[in-house]
Image (tube, rainbow, N blue to C red; front, side, top):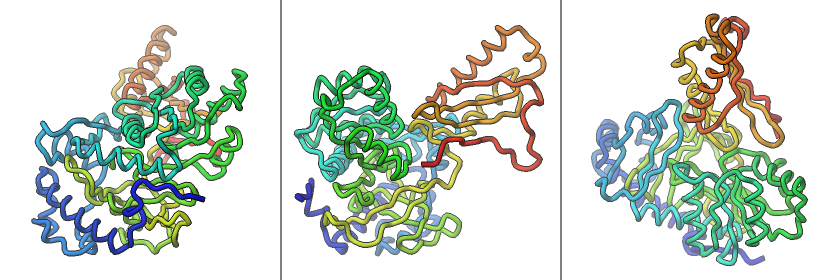
Length: 436
């Protein structure tokens, strides 16, 4: 089997060369970080006043962690390391409050992010001969544009259908001969159901591969999707804070996700002690980006739990591999690929007149898609009011939550005192989705 590479020299570089590149990149990122309002205060407190204070990769342990909370506190420009005129795009992801976490990119940063994504697609067997249909949401979410630009750089024809409108997705797949699709795992199952429901002949579709992201999923679910759609499914890992999709990616052997170590430094740490875990053991993934001028991020705590797969990959790449992610260290929910925090929902409820403080969040499956239901008590005055008032309140809550979390939940308004009250720490969430 011929193994495809975009940049074979760097993808198969000796460890010593990768580590040399990492040290050089880390020094450059320290120089950029010291230009920001945020790090110019935090780094000197750790004894780092210059890139020269970093002598080896072991000095990474001297550096402070950065969290999503830090990004919110630094909003809007506290982490910007270049003049605003050099920023050509921003992306953003949701946070636990109404304050977004914003990522700034120069043209050089965008070019590097696109090249990284193109490297991923080539590793998965993609080429300029492919027709790629991107079914991820376009806009502030990086899964749309950042994936799109990488696919174009590879030379593929890209169809930016974005999310939803399944019948249109199917028509474009058939009419234009789509060979690769990019979607969440749950949407791929929804797509299969639509193919059967609409009577499409699977043999009339040229589809060969799917790239899945935004939602963690098991190997069993991957196999189920592959069996139903008759395609190869590739797992990818990314986040807006690290330039979006393409931080780590599966090669054609699909035996772990290659971490692109010339562009990121990866650490696996015990989330309690922050000490490195032995290779092969589960820890929290901490990432330092090495390839962004506009907004450096040092030792960013992803809250994602995974492990490093020991040993080399059959493809010959020397960049280490991550196993599937087993969970997160925080309470974030992923609803059809969208990050949702219970505190976001609470924020809407507690600021709305006529709504009580007791609420309960249920996550379930409706077919192959996630369903979010919010049960909340309303005051006795509202409960005794006209049904039109209650219905208006329900729709208002749905609209405000959808505006904040981009997911439109079902809202059930409950009689005062009808929801259980916990004596200790309140249980606010019940995830009823089956574990694959």
